[in-house]
Image (cartoon, rainbow, N blue to C red; front, top):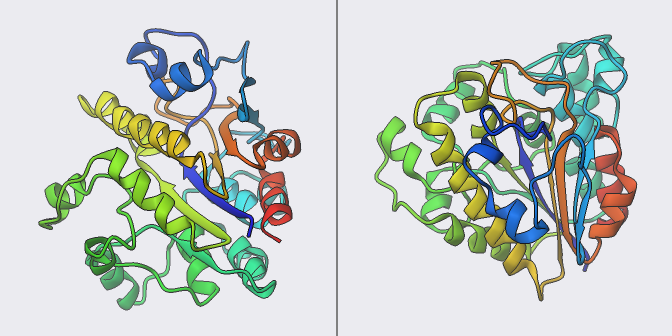
Length: 301
C-alpha cells in the first residue's frame, strides 16, 4: 500500500536571507541545515538531498492581493483555484460559495470514494465541540472537509490513548490555555506517534497552525520556542521515515512567518518538503497549490 503523510503548516514561506526578520536565519532550523545543508531563500528555493526535496509552491495563483487561508487551503485540499473561483483571496475561513465545492471535492471524500482509508490526526478540545453544538459553523477548511465527509473528529480521549495529536504538538498549550492536565511530550515522541498512526492509512493529514498565529502576532518569546518545537518534530519525522512505506509531504497555504518585519501574509512562495518513496514525484508535479491534491491522489490510488 502506498501511503502519504501530509503535514500542513499554516503560514510558512520561503523568504530572504535576513538574519533580523527571517526567524529561520535568526534562530536556526536544523531540518534545513542538517537535512538539506542550508536554509532556503528566494534566490535558492529548491534544494535536493538524496531522496528528499525542498521546493517552492506558488500560493498567489494569478490572483491579485495577499494569499489567504480560506482560499489557499481550499486550493490544496480540493485541487481548484479557489481564489480565482470567487474572484479574490479570502480567509481565514472559506467563502460561502466554496462550501459546496469543499463538500464534493475535498481529498478525504475523494479517497474514501476510491475505497481508501483516510485519517485526520488532529485532536480538538472540548471548547471546539461545544462551539459546534451551539450551532455555529465557521470552521477551517480541514475540519469542514472532515465534517462534510462524515469523518469523526478526535477529542482529548484520543490524545490520551495516543491515537491523535494536539495541534501544537507537545500538549503544553492545551494545559496552559485550556486547563487540561495532559502529559507534555517531546516533539520527537509526537513525530514517532504520528508515523505509527499514518502506517495504518492511505492518507493521513496533520495540521499545524502556530506558525501563522505567531507570524501575525510576533508574540514575545513565542517565535523561537514554537519554531524549535516544529523543527524537532519535522526533523524526527524525516529521519524516522526511512524504512517505512510512507511518503511525507509538508505544505503550506501562504507565506507569513518567514518575514517578521510585517504582520500580514506575504507574496513569497509557500514552502514544501517531500521525503520518502514518491518524494521526487511530488517535487516534480507540484508547482502551485492546486497541484497538491492530484499529486497525492496519484500516489494513494
